Image 1 (tube, helix red, strand yellow):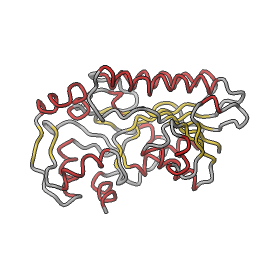
Image 2 (spheres, rainbow, N blue to C red):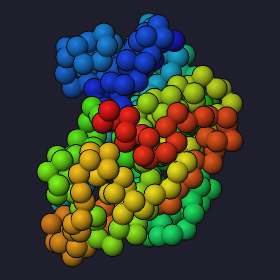
Image 3 (spheres, one colour):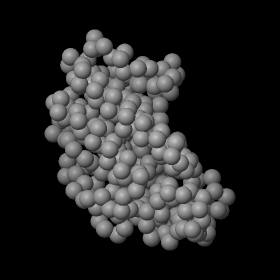
Image 4 (tube, rainbow, N blue to C red):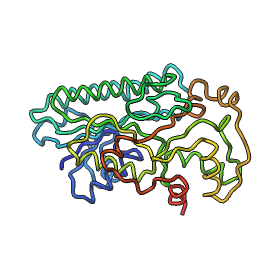
Length: 298
């Protein structure tokens, strides 16, 4: 297959490139620094502008991962604008470019996030569930998905992955969490009762690959592990995986003071099940948090 990836130099994109390069696919990555793409993305070719796809080499699939990191800094007005432009506006431009190809790609796999649901409290959620208590992150995901879904009007199969926080020894959430835990400073967030969906990077790559190759799969998929855990459970399991104690708690008020509205990412949660992936026949290799963390730190 000839596959183009936006956001291909990030954690998920690099892992997908590694997997699909080994499988013999031809990979193109849209990047602000296309000359760096071959070194970062397993020999994939870089392009700086969508206009470089002039139709002389039609694409079989597009993977849309682009977006500025949502948890790196407070959601100031300028930051919210950047997050919106890097997801919603870029996806709009991407779909317009795909539609203008003489032979549009057969499939678009587009990233979203479990934040689509907002703060779901203790309600058990699947892909048919409505949004809970909405915030900026949930509105962002909703607009992002709406832009991606426009591709269906051009005969393109669209599968949207609402991705949970990703566990990997190479970066992502654990890269930020592990250092204080290793110092014995790991802390529960607020009450610790909020649900915390997650997925191991290996399973996320396999789910992307599964949806790519199963033409009957379309619509929304919760990209999370089937095991549901609360923040307090996650804190203790991560501490055990690192063989350190975790007896501290960061008060909710301190998180709200430090992070503003972005604190909902830590104090809210979603009790998710990946119902549609299960019904499609996908099988997890890391379905349990204890084993997934052990794999990350072994």
